[in-house]
Length: 406
Picture 1: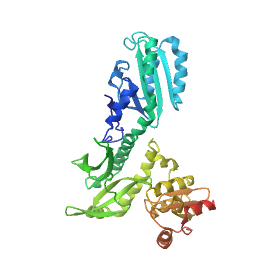
Picture 2: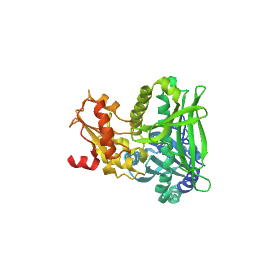
Picture 3: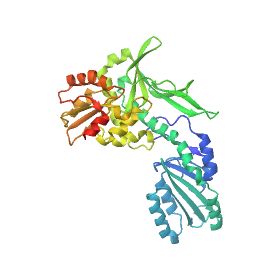
Picture 4: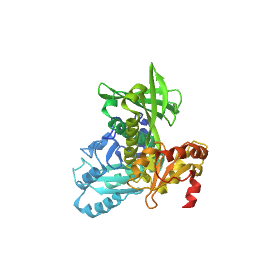
């Protein structure tokens, strides 16, 4: 059985549904001495038997910790060989296989150590073959089946994505103004593979109870649960009128929602609450730039205050997924006169779900209008924006037409 711990040091909770069946397959195919380093910083998955050859193994250990441990236990005659291996490990892009002679009694009765390091989308996988002689070491390495690794690591993707999402939820909690901490809850929807290998749905709720944040998990009849709208939405919870709004990672990705009573929202102030949502949007996309899951790859276009222009089409494609709108038909609103002085007003003048792109060379800001037709953009959004900011604003146009002007 592999030991697992995939909770980020910056998160209150870890992934709710560990893929134990994948762990079992990984253990059978990659041997009894293995581990998986997330971003090479944390050993999120490892065999208990590793402790026999790495005394201080633990979830807090990094790949560098293991390589240092290895360096201390190979014979002096292997130093040149070891340095070549360490150089390859530092620039690992696929997989490397090697074997080393150990200092006697440094790893128990073992005198040889076979190593396979494999690059994964999330970090490095380690598989060891300790043996008492070279022939045994070679034979043990032959029993390790690396052919299934790609599919296994792909199957682990949701587990890592969940861990990264939990880190963002904790960030949303930590950014909450103190007066709101006891007055709202955060909600997200999760899918996992059930006993019958079918997708199951679950609703996860996060709320502060007596000063401590608690996560509750409830089954959902539908695998995907319900999806709240992209806008502020009212619903009843007992006798209270609740307001639910999505929380966007960098104005692009809504992974969870926050609900607050209408009464408390009015007491706190809609503008202040909007400022909280905007600040989370900004800080979360910077955090997402450190993540490895494909879902967060759009964050690479974030340039600190907005998105770089070359991210226009990739992000439009992301927004148009599961819609009837082609990415090239997404309306954009070009706004001239961009400067550090005018940027704050521009950032506050548009909806949080509408990504802002900044072309500093041209002094141009481009707002991408989500869930909006060109006709609506022209008759409503353009008119409203002209009344909010005193900058030259071109009429809305399709993204494909805008890019053809470049």
